Structure formats: C-alpha cells, structure tokens
Image (cartoon, rainbow, N blue to C red; front, side, top):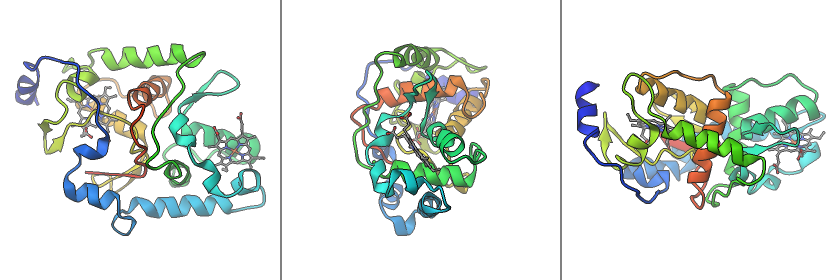
Length: 242
Ligand code: HEC
Ligand code: HEC
C-alpha cells in the first residue's frame, strides 16, 4: 500500500471537472451496465418490482405503478418533514414501517436493495439535482467537511483520490470522481448488489480509517455532498462495478 501512495501524493490537487461514473468504466463493463440481459443487478430490480406490488397494503396501493417514482432518485438524500436526512433506502424504510405498518426490511437486505434499485431505476439517465437549500444546507456542509478531511493511517482525503487522481489506475481500478449515482450497484467483487454506504465503508477501510455504520449520519451527509457534486450527472443505478 505504501509504495502506491508515494505514487499518488506528489500530484498536486487541481480543480478538475467532474465526469459521470460510467465514463471511468472499461468499455466492456460499460456496455454490460447498459444491457439488462448481461447485468445481474436487474435480478434485484425485478424482485424489487415484485415487492412493490405485493401484499394488501402494497407500495402500489398508495403510489400506483412504480413508474410514478420517475425522478425521485435525483432528489435524494432529502430532509424529511421531521428534519431527518433520509436517503432513498431510509425513505423506503420509513414508508415500510409508518405507512405499510410492517417491520423494517433492514439495511443491506435483498428486499431493500431490490426496492431501492427498482425505484432508482425509474430515474435512470435523468440528471441529479438534489436540493441543498434550507435545512439541507447544514447537512451538506457536514458532508463536505468529511469529504475534505484527511483520514486514516494513510492520511488521505476523499478528494486526494477522487479529484486529484481521477482517471489514474489504482490496483486494477480506474479512480472515478467517487459519485453515488450508480448505487445500489452490482459489484463483481461482492457477487451481489450493494448500497453506496457499503462502498463507502470499503473506501474508509482502504485508507485505514474508521468505518462508519451503514445508515450513519457520517455517510448520509457524505452521500448528500456526493449527490450535490454529481448535480447534472445521470443516475446510473443499477450500476455494474468490478
Ligand atoms: C399508506 C400509503 C403508503 C404506502 C403503503 C407506501 N407509501 Fe410511500 N409514501 C406515502 C406518502 C404519503 C409519502 C409522502 C410522504 C412525505 O412526503 O412526507 C410517501 C413517500 C414515498 C417516497 C418518497 C417520494 C418522493 O417524492 O420523495 C418513496 C420513495 C416511497 N414512498 C416509497 C414507498 C415504498 C417502496 C413503499 C412500499 C414498501 C411505500 N412507499 C409504501 C404513502 C405510502
Ligand atoms: C486511496 C484512494 C481512495 C480514497 C482516499 C477514497 N477512495 Fe473512493 N474509491 C477508490 C477506488 C480505487 C474506487 C474504485 C474505482 C472507482 O469507482 O472510483 C473507489 C470508489 C468509490 C466510489 C464508488 C464509485 C462508483 O461509481 O462505483 C465512491 C462513491 C467513493 N469511492 C467515494 C469515496 C469517498 C466519499 C471517500 C472519502 C471518504 C473515498 N472514496 C476515498 C479510491 C479511494
């Protein structure tokens, strides 16, 4: 790990334009991401759509066809009426408990990943435009501070990889701008679908920093900042990753 950081650090951070995550994928992976017949993540989408319709007080019974969720993912994370910052998973869990009257699915459960992917997929190709005014502003600043702080034994900020070294190779990966637009994503290394927070835990571990829990305030505010960085970029969920 040390040698590779020596290779990274001398590069001066410079303001660079942010590019969609799909532009950093290998041509093969990018083509596969666009082809449902070669993208295992769509199995989760199909399951999510089935759950959407299932049961007496189904999601569908209140919201109608899942196509009604078009555009929703471009606006999350968002501040709920009680002032809490919710990402799409959190918003769905809240409906599950408060509106459906059922036990929460649980973060990283197949059902929640499937539903989240099925909802996010309705916004595929649409531009991210998360609101950051009003009550979201303080959360955004928290996320920005997290992003800019050097962390872990390797003492690296997110931006030292995802801004200063975007486009360069690191252990077989091409470093992207670190956006959340492809999540939930099917990652070949996981052999399954996973959330953005799971991916963030992997980056925290990569620099030997604290791994925060899935759904933690740290990762939620960071997710909001990443969504703001991604404004104008297309939603790619369900993504396909190495
Ligand atoms: C009893 C009716 C009801 C059921 C059942 C229900 N919801 Fe909702 N849902 C709502 C209402 C009402 C809102 C708007 C709440 C608000 O804005 O505070 C909402 C909001 C949402 C949103 C955010 C939409 C937006 O524009 O921001 C999502 C996503 C969502 N629901 C998903 C689901 C899913 C998935 C299920 C099934 C697991 C479900 N809901 C079940 C009533 C329901
Ligand atoms: C040592 C370099 C390094 C640091 C520091 C780092 N990451 Fe990453 N990150 C990577 C690599 C490599 C990948 C996999 C390739 C890619 O998608 O960029 C990755 C992937 C990601 C992804 C998934 C992108 C996608 O489309 O699949 C996100 C989001 C992300 N990082 C966010 C962060 C955040 C936020 C931080 C700070 C807490 C951070 N990373 C710190 C190297 C780093």
